[in-house]
Length: 562
Image (cartoon, rainbow, N blue to C red; front, side, top):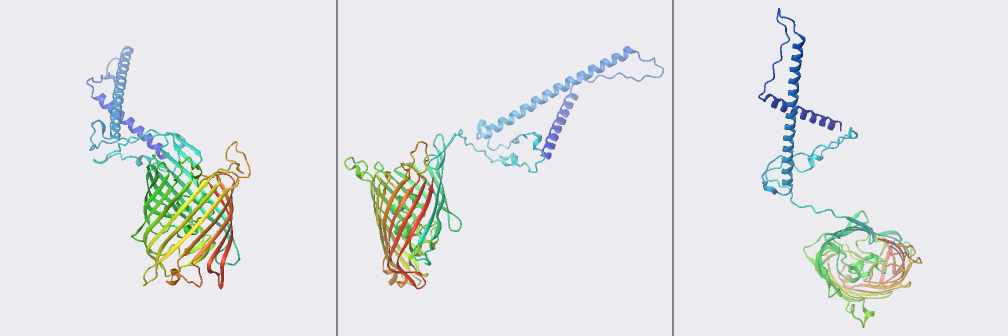
């Protein structure tokens, strides 16, 4: 700041010197000549100068000084007026340029633009070692002949409003711009029977630690961006734009959950009645992929649909082959507006399908019980494998995955069921592809013992929360939900006969039974307490020379969502 202060004083001195030069030039240019000063020298032999003569000479000198002072003041005023006119012209030119060539100013104009004036003469700024480059970060002072300033009219500033629920939300007062921030945090404990199995390994895990950012930039353009704590770092989870000009037809472009199976597309993981999705979905579901999809609601929102093209690898960030999958989804509520059948208002029926060609490494290479979605941060040792493919196997050939689903909600009851089917092509080096059939199903029943009602699987607000989040809420023991589920996944015997897996070590079928209770302290905090039992069609390897036909796990999970 010492350098800047010195520069300011130099500018002022140079300006003063310039002013004096102009004044001197104007003064010398006047037609009136300066009066000759009377000589004070006394010639030899002259009589001494009288007092009256000296007084007259002094008067003439005072008149001359006054005249010079008047001329200097007049010249200063004229100079100041000229400077004001010049600065006014530059300001007017700048306004015209900033308005996009307004007022007849040509684009080719090379007029020099004035630098912003130096500001802040506060002596407290002295001594800073940081150079001030801010004036060079603005628009160039000497535009080239084709340089054109932006003519975009800046809209008036909008007032920003903020509140909590859902999530932390910021929104403009005209509702055109919105930002929401959500957090999902899950921590769990797993205790498998028969200690010493490798795998599975009991212990404490973080299946999901996620931060979501979503909102809109003007009402038609919506966005979602989320990050996930992976096993070895931070991963991208969702990243897509949604163009919502009409609820009946929307377009989604980016990476997001594919519309395959009801328990994956229609229910977010934090609202599942069970800790995880069905065996078919957690092992073979396509999960999140990159794609372009049209979707929406028809017939007064009695029909939901989605259809699009996606990269073919499960939970992918990039395509591994030129072929993509087509995925379609339909879900109908036929009795949503039927008065006589009011008790069927929340009955959902539908189907989904995915068709494509694959040529890549198999994902996953092993099928497991107690698994989570592929994008969750759970190490493989936390779940138990029942079918592991040989290292030289690749997924090659046509693939079809589909489901037929039904979901019924009535007061505190949730009934979910889905039949899942399909086939996938597998091959080894030098051998042709073999199509292997796949099938599965699940049936889930859940009921709120504390009187809460559901219309779908979404956020639950307990009638009497254990920890109140609003003033005036009646506190109690929270909401309690009893849950039971049966789920099965079966792979055709071709997986063994074609040499893709070892039948002496693994099973081509698994059936799980889950019983548990969900305890909702309030709408943000939930505890899962479950027992999982798995049965296998054939004994599977759990540790060297040790096989089992079943396995059990106690499951405790705490979840925070806001």
